[in-house]
Length: 180
Ligand code: FES
Image (cartoon, rainbow, N blue to C red; front, side, top):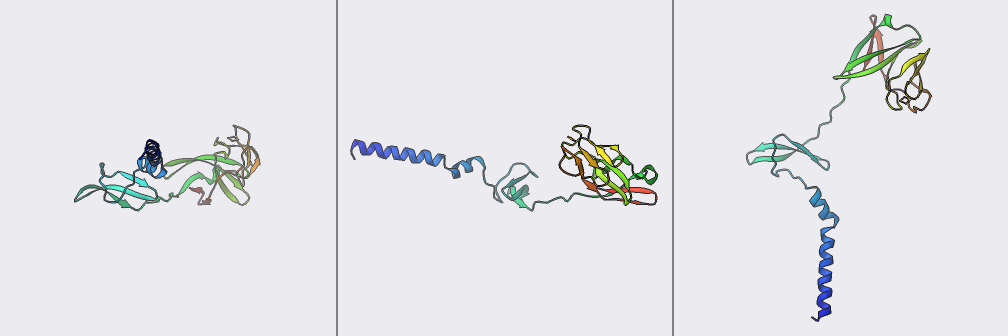
């Protein structure tokens, strides 16, 4: 092999090696190691997700190993909560309350309409400030002035673009209940 040929062979090998180092498969392999069931893990009970698979570090006869587990999806819990006495909500008016459900607090606004009591989350759908009753059948956001219909939650005036989130509300035995 003459001098030129040797140089070009070395050049091709070097180029191929650099291309191999930066190829996507190698980059992926170095940045995101693949977990397989039965691989050794270090911390008992630790969970990790690899792609669509979830693994948990479990104790086996061979020591701590990754074991594939089914990912559990937790359904949001809903519950009916007493919010107000019926006498506290006059026809055509709105009242606010804090409802505790599933360990969380929700700011709620209720309105007595001709068709019964309706309840909405008070968070403005623009940027989340709490709306208040501003006039009969209107709720206004103090931050940027969005106005909502207190009976339907619909936007009357922007900048909010979506209606308030509604919750089921019922009334019985002199009490008003909201389900969140
Ligand atoms: S947060 Fe309510 S209008 Fe902007």
